[in-house]
Image (cartoon, rainbow, N blue to C red; front, side, top):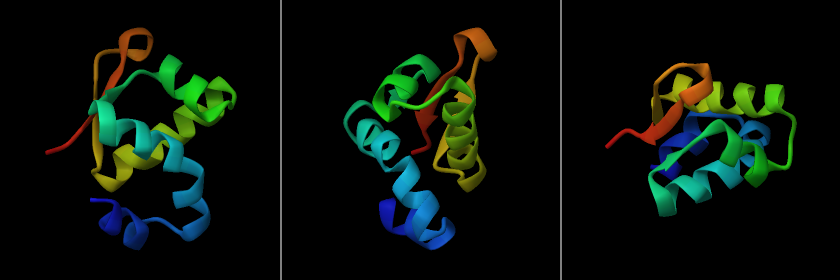
Length: 74
């Protein structure tokens, strides 16, 4: 799936979301709080990166803002 992401995202954006992708490869899902920790970025930046991944179809989000879980689409 990472090959597809390199085609859909620019190299710069792919490198930005790579820590999330690596986490998802191992765990299959991530919360915004964990993503914030993994990225070491602000909450707004983290949500922007997660939205970028949702836009590619790589992940889907379930729940509301406070209880959101981002899961890899199989």
